[in-house]
Length: 617
Image 1: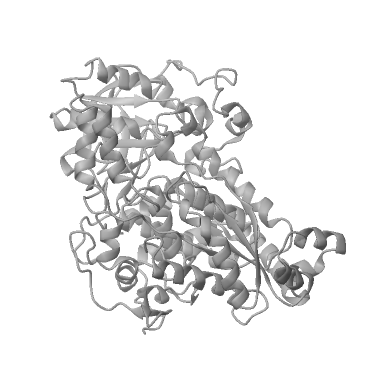
Image 2 (image 1 turned 90 degrees about the vertical axis):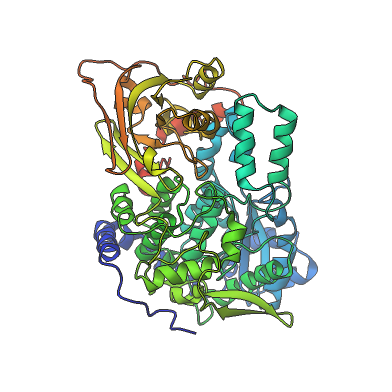
């Protein structure tokens, strides 16, 4: 195997951005690491964490344990491992976790430790809540998950953690919460994607046909059910699978664990190996690997590079900022913009192409993807990971040999250049996500699925204060034959939780296919599934926070230029007063939204992660 630490000279822009992040974060990162190292030194000196508990505290902590574990928990020899799980059986991505605790406990026991389920975190599905009131709680749930993770780990019973999460807000929330306990090693344990179902091209065609009224609900439901059909993550490359790819590039998964399907022997072997590894990298062994040391400035920059090179979810322009802040690191959209100019797009996965993550995995997957970026000097190799020192460990792929789990170095290139390409022959010379700025503020544009002829649009604005109003206008035929930029405002984090507006994609795609010039500008989200419609999203400052988007009127000419990275209104807004308004707390009720009123009042802007924790998560 090649040296896991050595790589070609790091690309100068990657190096420059990393240096800027290090310099900008010096004080906050130093303070964070001082806390982590102080807690780690105390843990290493005194033995398993639970040994510091008073007798009554400890007795409460093992009262319900089975007899074998109770003896171990009572003693002060075996390390304790926390399992924090997002299991529920409604959501396909998290259903496989039902059997994980028992499997993990057995593997931890075999490795010389003792594991307990420390707590659960909520896991909602944006796919279920799209266009519904529940979607307005989705982004807030990330910070709630972080809090729930902290509660699970707050019992001071544990020396390491196994984090079970897959989808949109769950993985970022778990990581933010666990980083508050950065002296503990932590291994993320994925569940894997479901097998491929209805081809993505067929699904997209059905959605547009339904939007046009050409097929009915029954036929549409058949198509969706054939696409989302079994346990596992949805197979398109949205936020859930972007989460998984980033966790591996950041060294928080075992190598190659990301896209192995559920309920296979290899998946089970990887799950057991993750449990063993959590014990091996614990504070009382020779490979102590605290989470707070793994998630450093280089790991964060690696994550941004991987997001851009894969055309991943725009949600991570916020999540990565928040995850970095949790480790005392200040990441900005300017950093992402600089990297986007030099990081090529080397994958095509739906909605950026017709392949899904299973096809990506079959083409060589993470081993080839990481290897290509390492060889081009676009990733830092000299990082700490749960597999050991050096990202080169992740050039290997797991396999079963005579029933034993082994990792083999992948030396051959991608087997399908339509899905995964070399850096030297990319799909696009720059990243799949562009940052925009102009007199309307700062925004994000996902360009990896947008045709070149649609990257620049200049057209009159049609302004909506609710996504349902735009859908109703489409249904009434009022958008037919018109070139326009749909401005959907009061959808930011402070207005209503920043829901995804993915339901707008099919009707706008219909108009685009008819030859109209169409785009969307919003302070809301479109997610990793935004597709082929040109969009400027996450607009900051948002309308509810005094952003210029609140001053726009129907007919104002808006220019969205994703190539130049600009977003401007060609009108004089001087003297205008905001129109429209976000819902009041009294109006923002139902589906539990009223319980999150305090989040609306404290949440920060999208550019700083849209977090209720501010800049010091």
